[in-house]
Image (tube, rainbow, N blue to C red):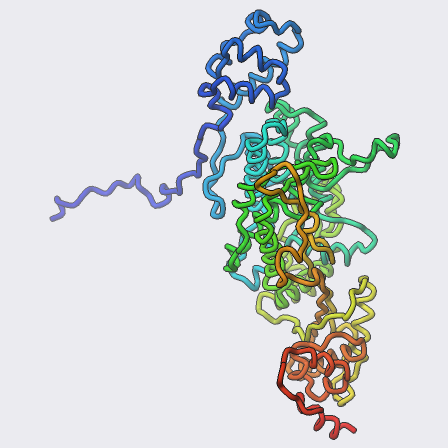
Length: 622
């Protein structure tokens, strides 16, 4: 029996097994297949590279793609291209085709978009520490503590945006060759899509929406500004300028163009006159204004950034996405609108665009502004505030920075990610004990309690100082029904959330232009009442939430009554659960009864005082 056993191979030690290294699949890029080009394909390439004046000469000589690699200076001169400078530029342009042949495009398998191809320059950017940092920043911040599937990061979102940016710019170029979209344009737009979120801090919007305003209230800082600074830092420390020029980019012009797409127009030089400053962008002329609407569309908010995070966030949250960006790609074209070139879509797609902004609103209500997710992010920001002076991050020239000052130095900011949460949580330093307690309460689900949500009757401009004052006012709003529980201002947190369709109170569709099948070149406007009578009347509202830090049942129940009394005093909208949490208080507000009369209880008679037992309550109180 022993003789029949296979001898043991001691070389196959368990430690010798390892996961195969992940490799990218090399595939040819669409530009690399120049050998298959016909005459018109070759002429199209000449136009994109700025040699449209040579098209007729190439047609006369019947130059196809397979002939390009054999062209020499002497042959170009024989064809009648007399200028030496023009011949050298053309040969330099053709060498980019050979370069693309040598450096194969990489394929990434993405759960949202499937197999996507990325240019070698994009891969070089991805393989930098500044971009790899995005692997460790949650796309939805504290929402992951509410939705277990929301574990995706800024890293994969940025790759998805670069992919969609390339798809949209290629769709426009193929549909309208007269737009003269060059390979440089396409590559710059993709780089902007890839790098647009480089400046996000720990837990994404919590950092620039809660933490920085609280720690540095006088500083007007947004992650877009940091994205531009991080992009400059990344290009400099990784020596990417030479690589960019190798792939045909023109510096510094294209660097300016990329940064303008991320953060909007840069400040115009003081020497420019008012007429010269009318077109605020420097990277591309006004004839290519549509290129600025692809990554971050300041005109109407329809851009590839939203397309990716709608699809990606819905996938990970388990929420249905009703917007189909692929239809927009099919119908997108550029039209002249009052002298400017804008991306338009078919008139029949207006409903699809309203769906897009509706899903944005749904995501904010159900996920991004979730009551529990918001208070978790508030607690994280509070913990970071208490830990700020005790976390040291090394930056440039040996300087040390804190969590709130790391944004001033990109070397330090590169090292600041979501990991600071665990750094505080598992620290043995007594200086971090207070912050550690807050984070431990998050992990063990000992969260501050939401005692109610309301809305102001009219939009309000609310500052950080106003929120602190409101905490004191809530604590002083002793319910008229009486209570034995007393509160201090520090027991409450007041949060104000602005909900809109992306353009405050405006309807973003009013800034979209459409075209008809019969005349694709003419841009038209479609008003809301031409679409449906069931669309929103208003496009913005404010939500006001109050949280109580004391979590015992008695304090929470009392805090709810304080909240309702505060709503009465401030003349806010009646809370949805007001009749449940404070049935003895809600009848005291006369216009809340009037609000109830607006309900569609047609044909139903409510005797005066019968709602919520209001008359009985009045009899007991007075």
